[in-house]
Image (cartoon, rainbow, N blue to C red):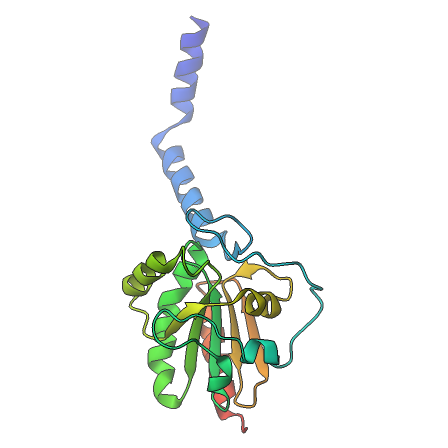
Length: 209
């Protein structure tokens, strides 16, 4: 009898209104609560680059030679060398196929590329995943989001150097024509990140070399 009363009490507690409210709250948490992933986390399939912790207060003013001259494996074609983009405004994005915020951000990057490509802006997306184990998932990712900018994989050293101990992804770097890092974005907010990225690109374009 006591068990029956307890069951009836639980049924009364989970009214349709409370169930609906719970679903909405959980949905909001899923949509806005996670703005970045940790590149050290184990993804559902395939390992990521293991990133060593560095001094979080160390900042990069320009891209160092070890990053500029590294040959990052490309999804197709010749290796990606960031030094080949010298003299151009460049957006470098670190990401992974398993990262939810990265998947949310990619359509916005595609839009930005379509808008700014004709103005001379170049865009490079470097996955932090193992290039051999993630080749298929990256290819599927490119098809799913119709990515039309350069895609490849960051070498271990490039990922470590750019992240500077902050292993959250996505991370985006806006590089001026003279090689200076104008802006660094860590994580993704669907409301604020896209307009901030656009503003940073506009700033880079109006600056003189």
